[in-house]
Amino acid sequence: MREFLFESHPSLESYTCVDKGAVVGWTAFTPFRVKEDADQTAEMSLYVQEAFRRKGIGTALAKTLLNRAAILDLHCIFAIVFKDMPNVISFAERKCGFSVAGCLSELFSDRGKHYDLLVLERPIEG
Image 1 (cartoon, rainbow, N blue to C red):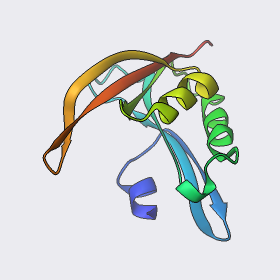
Image 2 (image 1 turned 30 degrees about the vertical axis):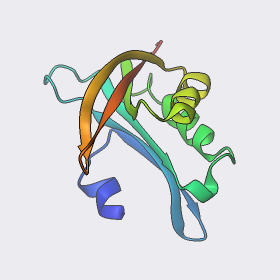
Image 3 (image 1 turned 90 degrees about the vertical axis):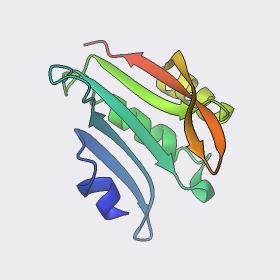
């Protein structure tokens, strides 16, 4: 997990939650690489292990990271989530201030099944 979190995906900022020496949650801003001058836009990722959900860990991680966005001179944050995960979408909207920007129909495939992805966005006020 350390290689995935810290070495293969360089981040602008990241935080982890550790319980008894094990990472149980993490969040990060990663650079948006469509254009080189898009350095004020970042993708936000967040994950909390299932056994540790609904304990405030995701909220604490998200708020800690989002509070750093203006300091990092970010203008807009986006996230990509599966459309069929209403709890994740609700969390992003209620706790993080994201709104749905659009849908990428059947963009992701796994074992012959196609999934829609939603693009969520959150402007950052300086």
